[in-house]
Length: 144
Image (cartoon, one colour):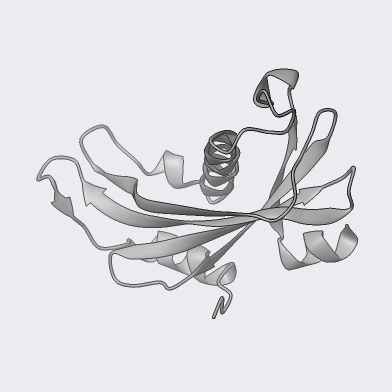
């Protein structure tokens, strides 16, 4: 677990709820998108991104998600979702997720979100601001 946390300096603990499971008695596939969202918001909050977003301004939107299921997760369990950044461009970046199960002591799920900066006034893509870019670069990893 310590190695996982060392590789993912920003990580979020999530308690698996009974309601997260489906009829096959494991966490339902769509629930992982919520887990990723929780970790993504926590990550961006820790970068103080939400202090800079103004209504009608520029902010992040998701253009694509991927998920790879490696092992089923069941209740009870606590998951640690680690986030790293890769593929930084002028107006977008990729968030990479690794889900570590405390009960299994293993990574059970991985995924990505392509995040595009969006100007809500103009309805167009916008460049990543310098403060956000500097913060993202601190957590960038080569995911190839």
